[in-house]
Length: 225
Image 1 (tube, helix red, strand yellow):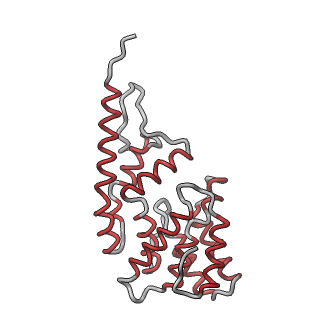
Image 2 (cartoon, rainbow, N blue to C red):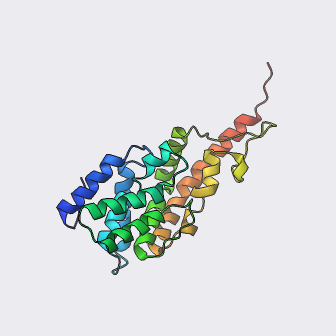
Image 3 (cartoon, helix red, strand yellow):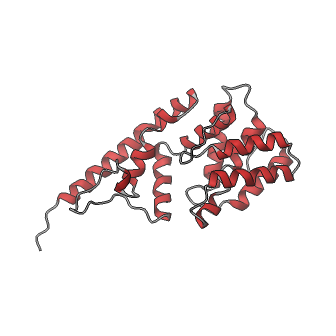
């Protein structure tokens, strides 16, 4: 259970609702708690940020994940946003604040076309993406690929290791590195988040380099049977 500097009973309801919805090892409750704490850290630089909205959005931002795994056509950010809004309304939140949380959650994902427009939405986006940086980001990416039957790397028809830089290179760690992990810091909104991302960047870069060296070396070994 988290410590909330808010109305404890209200946020326990929100936290317990979140706990009932999380069934994904790469987007587990520890991910949610890290996002919450990172967001509150960033929010210290923004006095006007609504802490109630931000806290609820952080806790509920991934509740649509289970539905998306069951139906890949769904967008967990959109589906979860509407579910979060309905839940908050059911426990007595105002329509304005519930809608604000919905907007934050719906725009926290890279893979849809919604862009965060409020400071709360931008902080949630950045906090969520910081959990893709560094060593934690590597571990979570590998866990996610394992669940989705992804690969460390893919080969072309001639048997050469593909770099992952192109979309057609397939689902692999190399692809995720170039698509997401490599330049996280360049896609964040807040100065503090960019600062944290740059400090974490070396861990992902070094792991990618070591992995690439090992698999490219192994792929060059000549077999004489």
